[in-house]
Amino acid sequence: MMTDPIADLLTRIRNACSGRRDQITLPHSRTKEAIARLLCDEGYLREVEVTGEGPKRSIVIHIRYGEGGDPVLTGIRRVSRPGLRRYSSSADAPRVRAGLGVSILSTPVGLLSDREARRRHVGGEVICEVW
Image 1: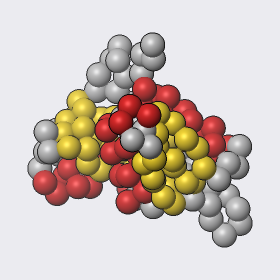
Image 2: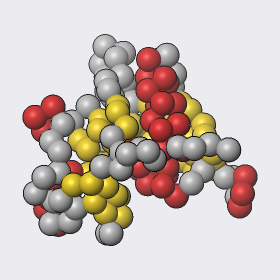
Image 3: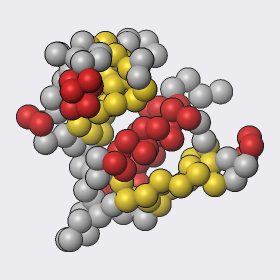
Image 4: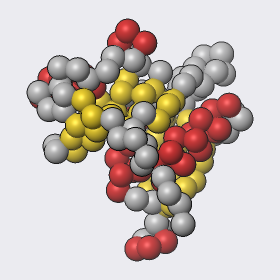
């Protein structure tokens, strides 16, 4: 049994970037898929695919690399974890690297980036920070 599947997702992405992997495959969940799609929309990942059907579904994440072959995603950190939840209002949504990065919030509207949460005036649990 896995205690924190979101931390597992972030660790797999971090390891794939440091190991120069082109893609990674992991078990599917709606939360992990939403986080991966949000990172793809923000430009940190190249593509996110869901393969398989029913309980055998999996997520295939394609890592994005820049011109020199360096990964676009240079850092990723879990903020709220099962032992210590971190919450933020829309006004206090954390800015990562003075706005160069993005933090992902779990809100009543769904998973949103910090910029989108501020725009919609919703707060929630701070899942992770990416830069």
